[in-house]
Image (cartoon, rainbow, N blue to C red; front, side, top):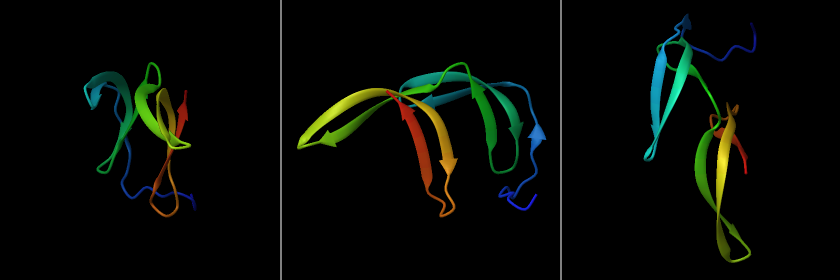
Length: 82
């Protein structure tokens, strides 16, 4: 595949995964794994709290991380749902 960006071979792996964001602990299931990463499935989007400066006022929002993407320049792009 010409658009393939992975540098490591993926291997199927179906097992329980626990991961942390700050003080929160999430349970997930793994799909596949390689030397450089893992793909997981969660029962619901990861919940986070973000602060956004709007017109000289900082507002706090509870949001769900619903997707993530590595851009061509190596930076990350995330989709959050309020």
